[in-house]
Image 1 (cartoon, rainbow, N blue to C red):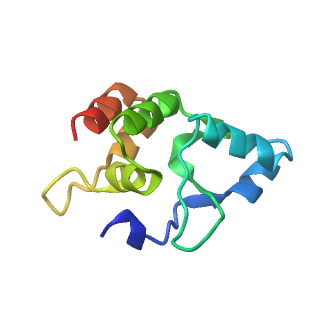
Image 2: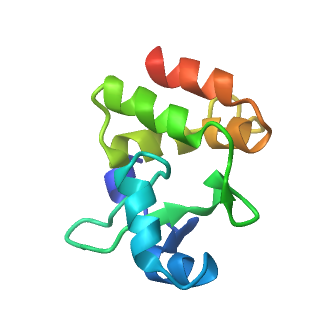
Image 3: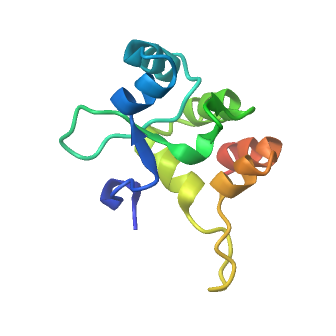
Length: 118
């Protein structure tokens, strides 16, 4: 399944997230534009959605900005980056770990390397 076919069920709307981060949705948008957060859009929508796995509590996990920068350097758009980060790494049915899971476990160096070496 490509990212363009995802329902983005693991994502938070920017307006909702902005309220949780101090009541300022424009702050969330600024963080996205500056490459501090990962965000995607459903086809035909103007609303940005923010994957919940990039947060530790309400703070972006260390390494998110590096991952976004690596993706931009590699020419990946938001949907392609989301797809890369959420695709299972293993070939076996029981191994469903993803790059997003490595990020959540503090292994951002491995995620950045995978984005650069895709």
